[in-house]
Image (cartoon, rainbow, N blue to C red; front, side):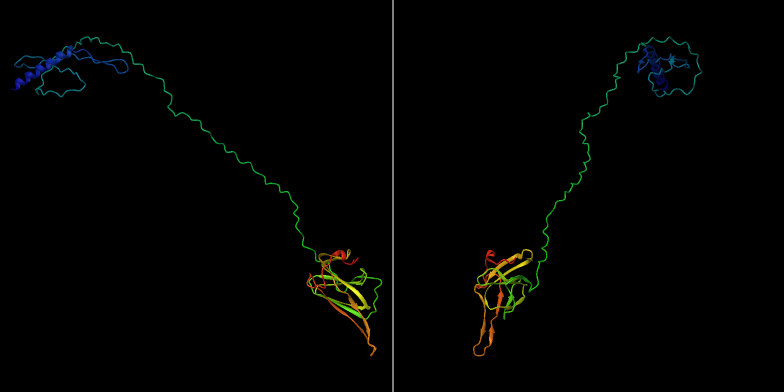
Length: 287
């Protein structure tokens, strides 16, 4: 049985050797000159006599992969001289096929198109100088000066015809908050005989008045202007509607002399009908 298997294996080896001699060389071109695979010459190994005298050629490698060795007889036959003459190589087509032209141009970098962007340039704000303040003259009303005043009893005006020595007198009481100047004139005359200054809430007594009929005037006001003999503020002019009559009376039985005197209040406004307000033009001049 073993001899039959061995005969079959030897026959297959010979067949492979014959086919290897007839297969042309395979040319493999990879980018450069062709690499030629040259078949090895068949090796004739003389085997010991077998039932069939068959020359077993050595296996010819066909593929780069080595097939697994075929189990053979472990007895190694003595080397047989082999024909060392190398058959001439089979001419192969060494022409290198034209290389496929490749595009060696370097494509431009595929960068995204540059979109022009508007770059806002920050311009520093121009420093604004503070507005020049032009001084403006603001008229601030100054507080009123203290009112000018005279003392009570100061004679503002006196006629040369006025002379003391009479026996009558006149008591004048200023009942308002304004200063005043009170005066007496002759019954039929506008010229003041005597005019005196009386402060607010004060009183004064005119002495030595001769018997007779007199007219009585007074002016109320504030801030006495001595140069012009008048008040500059809150002025009111008044007159007593009747006459002030001073009498000298002698009692026939006792021969006693009696004198009359008057008390007159100074009122403001129109509170008293006998002391009405009059126009300044009808008031006697104090200058």
